[in-house]
View 1 (tube, one colour):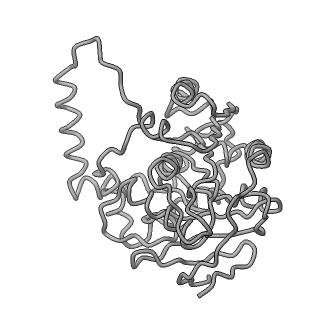
View 2 (cartoon, one colour; view 1 turned 60 degrees about the vertical axis):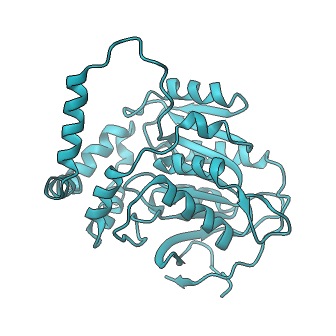
Length: 319
């Protein structure tokens, strides 16, 4: 069935037997690539609502819920960046049908980087080309290869860390931890720690994160993510990129040193473009007007798409 979705309409795509939720707004433009937005851990397409609304008049904008999050299915799978990488690659190939700019926040940024570095061929177009026309990483997650340590490691600390992780991964402790962190009051407290502008921490935002945690299977997704093996290092991935890269950093992020991480990305990809904003871990939601303006300006400078769109034959359930 051909994809026919009206502006700002949500729909479901069947991927590997699972329902994947996404939204689409705006019209396709021959002179600019579509934009696909990918959320972070515990979030969903709702976290990009201000960006979808702010950019859809000039771009075809898509947002997707990763498997296990938001309104997407939450099967009892072994979750990893590889699974989400394949999901995004297949979505571009089967639904969008032409190379897209990926914008990802936190773990969504890391997944976007994996797609750009590891899953390049886009089939079904006039010629084989890259899946990714450009990357926008917003406070992306992921680790770098560490330089050899000049100090002797602490064996007691390592043993304690491994023991604590093993306990958390047991079914009952994992369940109790999930029940604790999914409380609205804890969600609000966490958001208040990672947003500089407290007025951005609204009841709507809290509810958007809380609601999917009530879905069947959510607790097992939570446990599986913590069991997931570490993915490829950021430096290895970024050195495989051939597409334009824009990095947007919230300088007030308490979970990472944005300036330090930005310098490490630039070390391995000197041609990137970067901006530092007065925001926390989620600048796209905290200062959306600034982020939208930077995305707009950067995307309009990209080369025009070399491949025309294709008709995708996928199963779509409109909502």
